[in-house]
Image (cartoon, one colour):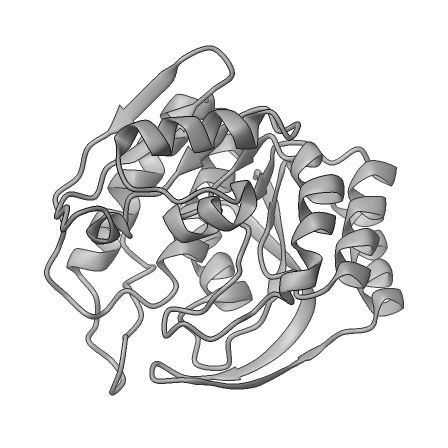
Length: 264
């Protein structure tokens, strides 16, 4: 059986973070493991608070996983501060992690900050170069590049700029394309270091999209663990998240979770 590790924050409501990642790994037939970086008190309506796990405990969790069950892929999600980023970067390099998918989580679905803004430079310097593929949404790509993203050319330029930060590939997610002059499609754009690939999608009219970024990135990690290349891993993840959103269980009073247990 293939294996995958998620290094991320927890979500007590089960729709995002570690919980979403483990469900997604399982749906792909991949054995999932976790390193918890932060404990987040949240539900479908709000983020109440979060508490970071100490860097030493993050290190110990990572070491115990890698020494016993080396993962075939690693998904990295919420890293709220520079100290956590430095620890995670150190352990990924020490253990020679492969198929590393970075989801640069900066905000929750409701807009609550999940990354200290002062840590973005550390993210770019220490974490991005370790990524085989990084999966920012449009606002995150804007924060990383310091550029306003208003059209498709801006998306491609942002992808090139992020690729220049040292990752092997970047996919900018299209879920926030309504920020671009009322655009209603959900097109993802992948740059694999050689050329751009476009993954079209039709926007699903629903509020139940809690954890979509976590789920998408962990689906990519699952597919990389299963042996697919960047293009196919992203294509399969796109189809998976589309089905997960379309079949959302409609739980909670706010932005509810998707259905992670959709299986091809």
